[in-house]
Length: 166
Image 1 (cartoon, rainbow, N blue to C red):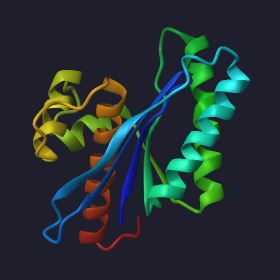
Image 2 (cartoon, one colour):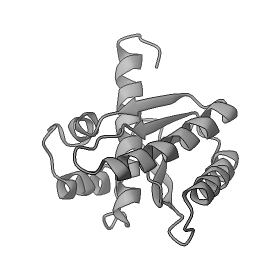
Image 3 (tube, rainbow, N blue to C red):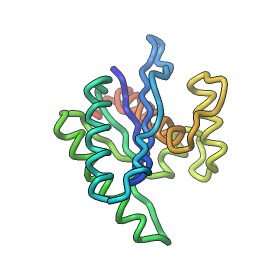
């Protein structure tokens, strides 16, 4: 069953959809961004995000979703706007009956690179390697979303191996 990973944003939201082969190896289905930069009003951006994500959920029917937890330390204004986008994402997933699991940036880094201190370039390179791609996914928001999806897939596999529901 497909797994959706989301890197939330108010102007650009990255998404990545993966599945796995019979051996449990990740397979890329689709990645990209929901780009609302042309929409100026925050409320209109939220509607745009809702409609685009709803369409994506209807088309690909993921079995579950990994969402990056919000982390900000300097720009509270941006963080607040992103949290509004996260609320819309959570609403879409709830209405679609898709289970949501959230991961901190450090949890994602650890799952993808085995180091919670990995930089963006290391994460992108591991996404490329794990999904057997010819190039690093672009833009960065999409690559980040694929990292979230891979983290979630690893979490599902680990919880399954130790007998916990995920």
